[in-house]
Amino acid sequence: LNVAFRPPPFTGIVATAVCSVLGGPIETIQLSGQSSRHVFSLSSTYINFGFRTFTEVCEEVIELNNMSQLPFTFRVSSAADAAVPSDMADVELGRLTIEPSYGRVNAQTSISIYVRFYPGLTGEFQQLFTIQVGYLEPVIVLVTGYGVLPQVSVNQAHISR
Image (cartoon, rainbow, N blue to C red; front, side):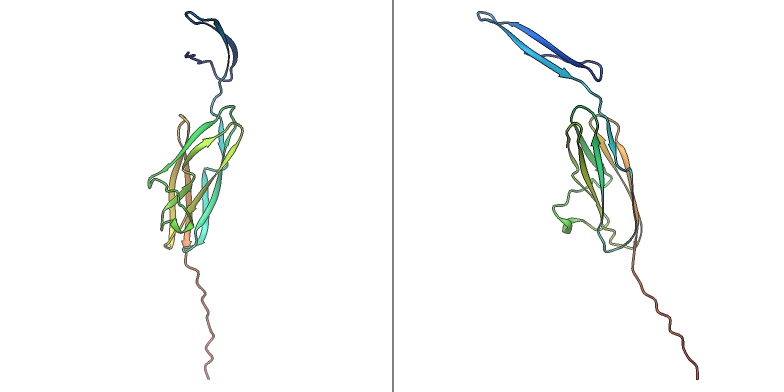
């Protein structure tokens, strides 16, 4: 038995299907369905790590909130195809790593997406990645920061005699 259900968004339907089976009894099946739009929010679409020691792994968290009545899937992608590290030792020099890079968010819940970057070099860094929810247009997230080399400079006064 196949039932097609294509109502407008935010519609709920309850129905009874009466099935006549050849040579058998009449069966009734209770059907129910609900439709909803994908409604979500991201806690941020801009991550600024600021000034960080170039040897430091930078980490921030983005919250992906599902505000709709149905679950949805998401996928993260970047120019470098964001990797999923098995541990912090796998965070590569100059590479953005995002965990999880795909998944499912149930209705009325949220998921934490961890964004890590290891500059490895001094200077400015800037990278983009996208988060695509279901069939919707991808959302661009910008990650920026500056890798610095900590230094201490001491000036001593020279006394001439």
